[in-house]
Image (cartoon, rainbow, N blue to C red; front, side):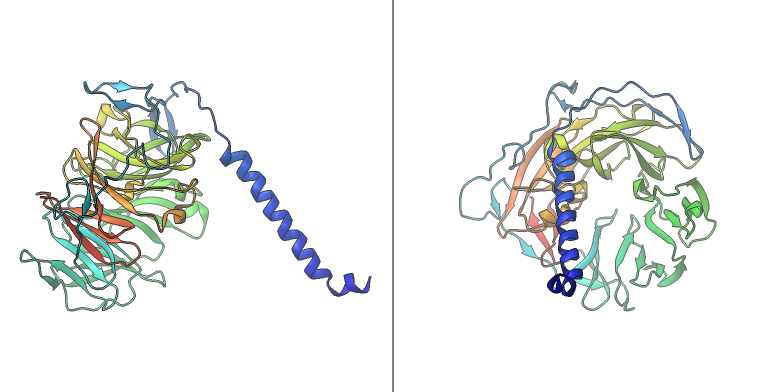
Length: 422
């Protein structure tokens, strides 16, 4: 009894931790390990949520495009460790050009960078973590500063399409919009987050996160923060709201609402309370990229149909075509590891192998090696174009419109590298 009294707290803590671990294991076995059989939903009636009138016209069956461009709802998502059975070509010699095998890479920056971008006029721009300055790659391939100003400890950067403005976020919650043409900055409210610029760069969309849950809104404002207006209340649903402005200036944001374990309904939010259609997406963990013209959406989700790993899809996302031509591309990767080079051509980094559950826990893929694919969204054809000669965990893919060079960031080193496409 003396022993128990002496170590009572330690014994209770050990028992508690063991129970928590057991409960976590049982939850994983019950909800994540088991396969879930999905059913075909009926169309929902038009609803009005947060002042936005929305209707569901999505087909819940995933599909691939056949040669004739028609949907094939009976073609299931490939579900194996090497992304649809693709095996890296053999051979030890690295090619100068990306022709499907091991390919040489070149180092572009010697220091780690933050949130690089390829601007609409084909300029590579980025923030240098070491010296706190912004740089661009000029036509001669030289790195030059965008400004002499030093920005210390920037935590996140959101660029305008032309790269002339950037919203900078700091560890203390401060936010500024800096204009590289005028070399001037304006302060934005600290409670704004998840910014997106309009195609012209004159406006932004964001979430306004007030302390009170009833004071949280999806908003638009001028790029300098003036004339802010609410699009919709978001309450406790901020995690399901995505301020991502479409290139055709029709959509300022999207949001999702759960249908069942493996499906969500995706809504499109316009600037003038438009009654846009909605569509069904087969999974959770939604990430997206707009095509250059804003008529289609590339997105990734994870589900039990794919071992809780991400699946890559695209769908029509403009006007009456919203929800049409939804296609499972058959690659296990995230949309934020992709970029549109043209309205139909997409480049993606695809992990050679993914541990089960990587969609739920992306950190499981932090040390995977990526292959580079090119996808034609008009035909559904995907092609392995390069295996970087040095194993790379790729992010921030950037390709100019001439598609001669592909740039990317390696998540391990934080540096920018390039691969010659042509």
